[in-house]
Length: 439
Image (cartoon, rainbow, N blue to C red; front, side):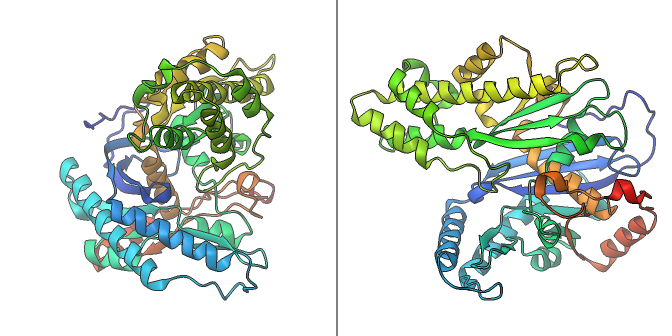
């Protein structure tokens, strides 16, 4: 990706920026993305310069090791009488995954700094976000283990590392997520209108982004997982083509099919997911079972993919329309619809969503100078900034935590970089809040 020139239309920014990096490991350790941002001023509302973003696939061996680690952990935890301190995790495999990821994260940092021509000592902190290892004990307590080997990464790079963002929220009796809604709002909010972000990733999710009217506007942010999207289409493509391809690029196969009324009816009979958020995305099993049965009844895989695509689009459009109706009043115009996620390249699916929304404009976030393929790493960089400035980043009404907290665990890098970060943190004065706003 080419450098995005920094421009702030309202202020003549002449101060030197503070630099933060964010690295995000995709669910199931399939992909890594990184971003470098410059912050011109103090606080989460300061103008942001996106200097460089990079993404690439993780080695297949890391993905397989992570899946094995997750499977063994869940098997050891599910159904036995463990206590909150008796969780059996294969430590050797966990160490291997963390150390391998640290090597790739170091490579991403080096590439990020090299291509942006930023000296290493100018980078204040690097944030690392991953889905981690999650399970519940028999007593119902949530256990989370970060995959970031922060001490090793700090030693290898000399940089200050912020990781384990879900931990503080979990300590406050939250679910440890979703953690990105507030950073998403900071990057995409408008001062003139509400917005709805449709994220077409492995799971289709909707985030309501209220316009920035006052200091309490962010408390109206909502987010909900809607339906499996990329994960369902990719899994179906892989199984229906007997492993010939795992991605229906641009909807090339889907567009060759026709709708199957009986399959569409079976899809509609399924109950809508009630989860606000799932760290690994919504499961595809029940949809896959129905779709596979349809192929066994003699329907072509192109027809099955076409019908599945139509059902996904129909479900998404219904939820968007519900949000639009809820947030459109005499004092508020209809929210703008923004789009992100890799599945936005599926032409047929996008056309179906647009058609059911009566051709309402859907604006790719790239038009706002936000690279959609590395948006998670940008949000991670924002969480890192908020951790350094001790700004609360969690939203209790979404995570279920008892109170909002600054997130992230800080590990010191070299003595020089650590002292520089301490000086920056000492110059930051936490925003005073009333008891009412804190609650």
